[in-house]
Length: 86
Image: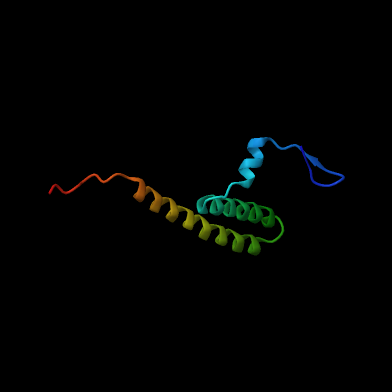
């Protein structure tokens, strides 16, 4: 158990604490950023449509980066189908 302040006490498992300490990959950071932007866009939509659209466009740019990153990873991970025979 980890005590944060006098008023709040949080229960952390060993696995949860280790996950928190691990360094996140670039892809995980982008996915988290995209998720946060989409949530913010949804919440803002109720109050200000133009601001929501701006945040949504920003989230779309992050999504495009995620797709590009995943495409690069899949190209690097695929085995070569045609190898030249010398």
